[in-house]
Image (tube, rainbow, N blue to C red; front, side, top):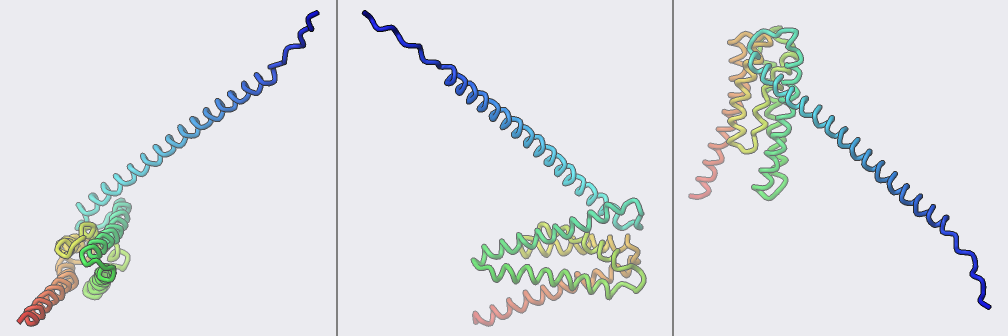
Amino acid sequence: MTQAAGPEPDHAPHRRTVVQSVAAMFTAWRRLLDSSAGALVRAGVRASRAWRAWSAQWLLLGEYHAKSSLPWREEAGRARETASAVGLRAFAFGMLVAGLVESEARNAWMPAVATIILEVLWAAARYVIIALTVPKGSVDRWRLGTAFLAGLVPYVFGATPALRLMALAASGHLTRRGLIGAGVPRADASRAIAWSFGGQVGVTAAGWVLRAGVALLAGV
């Protein structure tokens, strides 16, 4: 006699486990896609806002410098604030690049630090000289600071000594226009710029001549 076959194994639990695993993987994959899509959308929104803000600041900067020699108007306050903020950031960026260039050229970090400190001290000295030179009561310190900081924007290109000299000249021109718009009479604004910016040019030129003379004597 043949033995009767036993009951067939029940594969239902195994099938349910497989189905559940596939469903869980599908759910995780869908959540990953939803999360990635949401992150991309948020990143796109942030990038768009950053681009609009970046573009707007340059438009406001151009608006300020195009009319900086005209009397201040209340509705142009945002352009003035933006111009002063951009000028300060441009100066900081330019000095950072100048320090990196100097460090690479000298293969040392001390000349880079010295360059940055020297330029910062010169900028502070120019501001103090202007504040002392303009007639008392012709401009308040806030207006003076706004005009001065907005005039620093050319220093964004001040990576080398020659470029910084060009930036100094351009900064003097922009600062003079800003001072006139802030209320300083033209003659007084020109005199203040001559003493502050021209004084730096004179001292720098004298230093170059002195170093050239020392090098010449050392080579004799």
